[in-house]
Length: 149
Image (cartoon, rainbow, N blue to C red; front, top):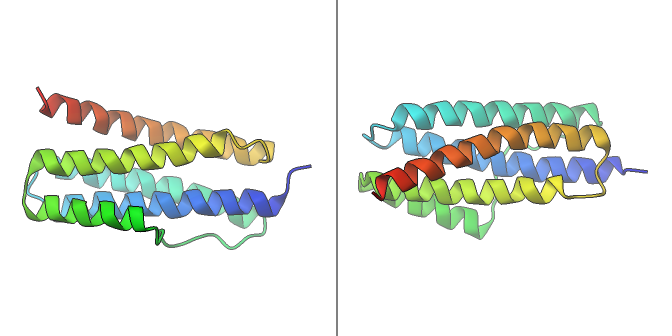
């Protein structure tokens, strides 16, 4: 029998990581003169929708939805690297850092999808969110590779 507290913990972890992603994209969009600012803004909005859907799922399970990002040292380091790249207006460095963040969020969602302790409805919600996350990851990966040519 799936455990609602486990479902809530997994969802809240994904919410925090997704909020980190929103913040990273927002930072990249607001502080760069990059031709990609509109793309970053769009991705931030899409990730905000993912977080909101996962927050609704937590609330439906009777939990308190996460509403902030993570305090992980790795996420903080990535954010500082992104800020440095943005401050330097180096388009390729910005894309590299955004794509590194995408690798992180994609891996978190892949781990969650493989979690055998999740209830079917929560797994479905995570898989739907993962589809959006993977699309964003692949877009940034392709953009990164296009700038390396």
